[in-house]
Length: 276
Image (cartoon, rainbow, N blue to C red; front, top):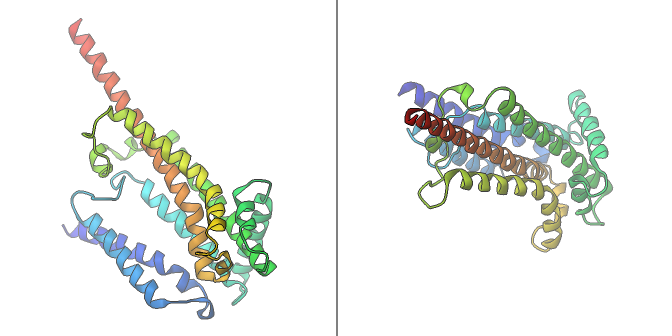
């Protein structure tokens, strides 16, 4: 019991720290609405604590199948740290922030080619916005998109070369997929594969569709607001890492479907041998 409470508390604290991370790293002049940030951090930390404290998960998938969720957390944290240093560089430049600034602008320029998500993110900015703000959005988009690709590549490595999730011990499908109802009809493997493919397709398309959606709803959300450092960090991180998370979730479900199919073949083979 004590170990579970401690583990849940540490995870909740880390998630709360992630929420307030931009406010901690940005200079005071670049931060806004500390009350909302603090409330969001407490809410997120409380939800994660309750999820990991309970014996069975309620909404968090692959809770007992490391390192999927912890790798998501690490890559999102890396993205927010680097974007915070990038956005805070004009207010309080340091040697490290200058290095991140140079790296981000180089990556953004390299990924700003025809029909790329980074180019679409740049083109969604209104014409009246300062050129530096447009370049900053491009740099942030390029850096975060590169990190999202690295997170997908890392999880592919974990599946192929580290035999996820079997390398961590036994894998309980129903505990690790609490939102998946096996009784709603249809073959479980077919449904898992279908859901996985939908997640992967959506994850691939979202970085292209979201800039177009922002342009279509410019009257509701003005892209020029991305000139605010905190809003830039959160929006660009979500734009890159949520689709990456959907892709890794789809990859994980495909892997689970493959394991169930292998188990079925082994069971059928054993039954055939007993009959013979």
